Amino acid sequence: MSKLFEALKRGDDLLSEAERESLLEGHIQSDPMPPMPTTDAGSVSSTPKQDLFQGAVTSTRTVPLQVSPISPILPFDGTHWGAGEQYRLLRTKIRQHPKSPQIVVVTSASPSDGKSVTAINLAGALALKGEARVLLMDGDFRRSTTCAQLGLPQEPGLAEVLNGNCALHEALIQTEQIPNLYILSSGRAVANPAELLDCSPWHALIRFSRAEFEYIIIDCPPFGCLADYDLIQAVCDATILVVRPDYTNRRLCFNALASIPKDKLIGVVMNCVEEWFLNKGRTGYYGYYDKAPAAPRKAPIWQK
Image (tube, rainbow, N blue to C red):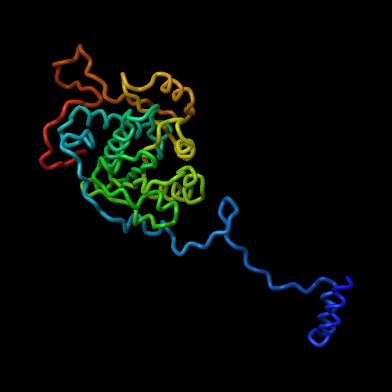
């Protein structure tokens, strides 16, 4: 207390009697500083300059799809009739599922099983039905192929939105041929994608997407390989596992089937299935995915 009295004695000319008494009683306090906004990790962050989601759907850019003539992507113009019918069947099963899933994650047991093709075609089939909007989100930051297969720009995308480097309407793409189909690419590759998905902007984006889109299809990394999958799967309503006969590792496939929560696993998609030998030559039967090159697409017109 001696130092306090010495300071008061030196400041007699500056402080009034009432102020000295209040200081001794501990009642004089400096004006409180407004609390700084913090992130989930507790670090100080600046207030965002704009709402990154405001007007995202209404002011997004429209870009034409550029699909290779022999590609299995969006087989709804008659060139891959059998595959198109199977994706429509998959669409029907999802729309009529008792749980009415809105966010569906498409994953696989191992790389190159065909999960990206399945995610794109499922989103396309859903967007061709009715007037509701469908969002295809590329959540595979490390081995993204969605935009390359659709002929769309890779950046900006999901990574830039979650980093706060751009607004959602700058990254979101509305496809010209299928106006109800919206694409959000993965964006620029980042060193640790799990950090982007373990933050409040990711959950805010999911809440916004639920309000704006009838269905959200997420192309997810292979099951169990990365922490990214667990963070994406945690916010989804349903999971579809894609397997490829004579290619998918059997042990990894069984591990995935045993580990995916039973309340979220709604089905398994068999990709690149050969036509059953007893049905060869019969009309009206096709394998899930026609591996033979189709006739070139002169002017793709995707049909419902």
